[in-house]
Image (tube, rainbow, N blue to C red; front, side):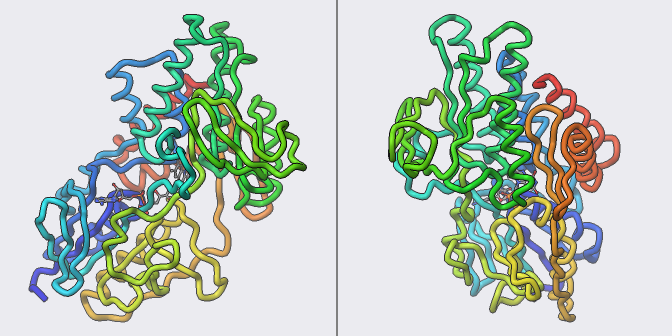
Length: 424
Ligand SMILES: Cc1cc2nc3c(=O)[nH]c(=O)nc-3n(C[C@H](O)[C@H](O)[C@H](O)COP(=O)(O)OP(=O)(O)OC[C@H]3O[C@@H](n4cnc5c(N)ncnc54)[C@H](O)[C@@H]3O)c2cc1C
């Protein structure tokens, strides 16, 4: 090992950024910390639904840039302690302890943190990847916004007489997006710009209820709120194929939707939020993985059977030894795990005993369901409505304050909150 130890972090998402900031505080001055990511921005995904459903009558390059500024945080805040390199990672040479970069270069490491996250999964559904928009990155959110803006312009000009939006996947992203788009159209109707009865928003999911991974109480409240907002919810129905202008779904005969087993939903804008898979590049990493391709880690977040290599976030599979439950794939969990990983990286380099992570039994969660309304849950406790929304926004502010200098954090938060208020 070289005298000056080099810690390399792969990925600038919630996991990578939070490990980097903890290491920046606790590593020795002569330890070198490098973060490699395909983007110099850290995307705050919890706000993407707001961008996607931002008032569709505003557009133009400047507006697009200013919307992106509300979700993307420059990684510069980690400098100079952490060196940031914008590169496309291509693989890993375990034998020589090198990260392989797409341009043929390599980066040596003494300790490695893999935080490469996830990307959309399409499950081989014909036409889905080609014809559906998604909501994973800021560009995705802006693409949805652009598409809706075009369709609204068509309605205004009279080129179209109705607008149909189909969203696949009633997990948190799908629910938040459907509700916010519905709220945006309510606003357009209030301003007498577009009648809402010519707009249909349909949320399709194969499960028994929306937000299937949460408590049934949260699901009930969310579904009720969606229906109040005018979103049509179709459950126990799977998307079978997506074509230009239509979505073919398969529903059991007991389903209330007409047309028998297969139903064609006309769609001017199809959006897929129905699942993620580990980042594609992980296929090139010869590390132990679960059947879905996530890297298997020990209770210390060290990759199984590998010294000095750690993985966390959406790219990793951690199962709690006591509860036998996997850690959720959320920003919240990645942030919670990050200090343990940072500490263990330093322990590994100093050859001291690693610390096991103790997972929470329960995670609080919040789902925004249109406008200033959110469901906040912890176990069986649920808080709904405006207060839930305010607390959610304060939790967002806490995140920015952890990351950024006070003034920058507050500015970032205020900019987003003011911008998104226009949606409602
Ligand atoms: C729309 C949406 C809303 C969400 N809302 C919430 C929420 O409210 N609360 C919550 O807790 N969670 C939320 N999540 C989940 C949360 O965003 C993820 O769990 C979290 O981003 C995982 O963090 P990560 O660092 O593991 O991965 P990511 O955030 O995906 O980061 C991965 C990083 O790796 C980089 N990368 C990937 N491949 C390469 C490569 N080949 N070369 C170089 N760099 C690469 C990427 O550029 C990125 O910087 C939401 C997710 C989405 C999509």
